[in-house]
Image (cartoon, rainbow, N blue to C red; front, side, top):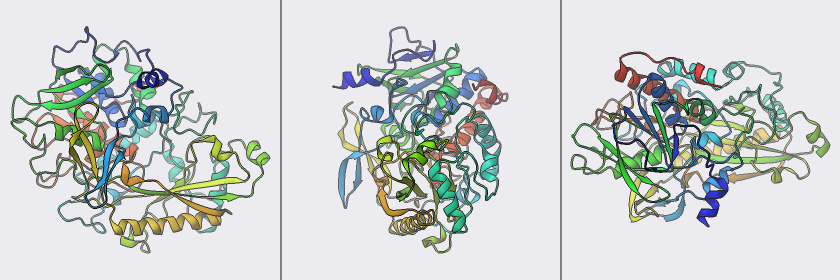
Length: 535
């Protein structure tokens, strides 16, 4: 069954001459790499691209495969290892979800492209959010990320200007449901905005629902087409897919020396040496890798001297709301966009900070279309929105390792998470605001759909939190583990507070900032901008 499934979705043609799937006899692993990057998603691709173009000999490890162009998100998810999820009070489910997606390019290959900057509040929410033992203020500010936000937005075709522009006239980029939502927002006195997305509109022909499937035209700026493919034939990069990082090893107390790996097809294990290691697996997988990295110098796992690795796990709360508007099928079919195009085309942040919401911290509301055409073919026009809000960090919410083992013989990952009652009250308030929005847009028969965020999520943050104090953080402001000189974290694990919007753009901007610092330290000179290496 597994073999036929893999044949169905795995692309056997390499991305380029630098790409190898699995471990092969001629794979050049003898010499230590300048940098080993673990994880090829939003953060890993950004950092690897930076190192390769700086001239550093770079190894990029990806546990998943390169999916065929026809493969869907569901195809990839069907073969991914699950985690245990729950808590000691409610018990544990075998259906925990510790991934964005497990494939080359990670979640960017299938995501909707929503690309928000974090607000000033997200970098320092301490006036409203206080957590015992876990500072929520980032060690960097929005101004530190501003030039990197600019660069990512430019190269990924993200229309920041359109998002910032206050207007009442609806833009021509809206789907038909979004046109109704835009009008409803204005009726409520809200300020609707076009959702910023990583999509090159000059290439987009609105051919699909733009989520859960790959873009056939290269319009959606996933990291494979935008970052990795242009470098896939370079001599100083080796991209290994189908290779799982098991643990980092040490020869000296203050440095990692190698990463122990496994070929996911054969089960063969091997070790790869490196001078620097960048972890970009996602906030669950990165924490699990460090916890598995038990050495004589780190008996509790690398970076875990103060029992903080894995703690502060945040996954954002979310819920969907939808209703029906009386629109004929002919009107839907005749609309230039209809249901098609980007997953989300309108949003509102009017309740992001809202004194009526418990704690005064609300969240984002935005259009969130179904990813299945079959659900959109009935009578009337479906309006569907999602509300997203940051969960408060907690020492008790964490990634742990089980005493039971997974299919590879490794400790199962445990997502130990209990939702804060105050956060649930905040979510209920925001769902009410979503209902108001739908009603103002003319929708009836409004229903709500839980997202099961507590079982795992595509929005993962905080398990290797950044800070200045090693007693309350795992990495410093530049992503380096406090206790090691050559191990860095560049994904959402870094975030002391998860922020109330989609995190991908902020993860990418921060990864670029961290990668530039590492590259400068390694070579002594600055790195060129990303722009020339994009299609």
